[in-house]
Length: 312
Ligand code: C5P
Image (tube, helix red, strand yellow):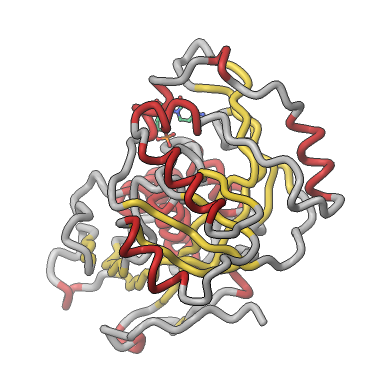
């Protein structure tokens, strides 16, 4: 079953026009294949959405909300900025400027996906906000158009408007849809410390990258060789910036997993297979000062998503 786990409803969904899950992603492989004139790196990555998700609530602003011509955002995690620097509000602003539709939104974000994790949490929220703004405006845009709006302000946003599995190139925003991979359970392991994506790319040395042909990696994974070749070229610079990540990876292999790979620019790892210890979830996090989430691959098709819609 692909139903998502429930989260405590702090706010009754009836108070809102729309509630959407905002899944995160992992990079099953990530090759850095070059550096571009604009400073970005050319990537080739197989991305997969996973069930670890945030929840967002949206309503169209009305006179009774006060400030009807301003978006507002609240978040249950005070570490997350709720001003115009938040990608949710950038996404809504982008939607307005691209479509000319003068609607403003009230948004609540319930954050579960760790940030500075390489899981695309912020980008996913932006994609969800684009989707919500479109839904609540009579669906004037296609998913492809929303993905183009997203690419304007973040490399990962387009992916979250895909069907859940995509081969991504360019800055990460050019998507090639590939068939869904078989269902797979996984563990996400996240040290409390994070890394900034820009810092990791700055520390990258192209001569240290794997030589593996990304198309070949893609073919193998599609043939179902899921325990074959796992490579993330960003591990080298991330491990250099935070040496404890290398030790953590070794400890995860020692704990019994078949595959342990950093996702994106870190600092989280995804782990496939099963740990030796039955009480891994209780023991490992405290011993290693990490958060652990158990989740599974998830198709990001909004028609399948866990959401409530109350047309105004
Ligand atoms: O596009 P996004 O905001 O996610 O990227 C954050 C930073 O990571 C960029 O400013 C850039 O320095 C770096 N980056 C890169 N090559 C990419 C994606 C990101 O160098 N393909």
